[in-house]
Length: 159
Image (cartoon, rainbow, N blue to C red):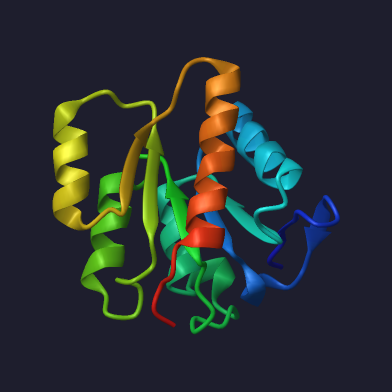
């Protein structure tokens, strides 16, 4: 069963083929804050949350528990943490960008990593943006709402 958040209603739904944002994050506090800000600013109707890199790849490539998901309906944007259990974010990014079917999905790295090497590797792999998570609650809220505004309302991506 595939369940994701419908931000218009603030509840879970079953329409997994209509995901707008895939949030790949293992920190429950960051998940809740990001969802709250997206909901507050009405930037996305539906968000799928996955908590590790392996689950992200299963969702994106419609395998494992997501095997019945229509792979032709990809998220409009992926918010990707780098420091993830099972498969790290750089490996997820690599697999996304080498696949013809997922290469054009905008990926925004949203991470607590301050390492220059992570920044360089992310851009070499084709990330759309690299944003270090602010430690301050209000600044993080502003980052989350700004991401929604830019990537969902202003940015144009190929169909």
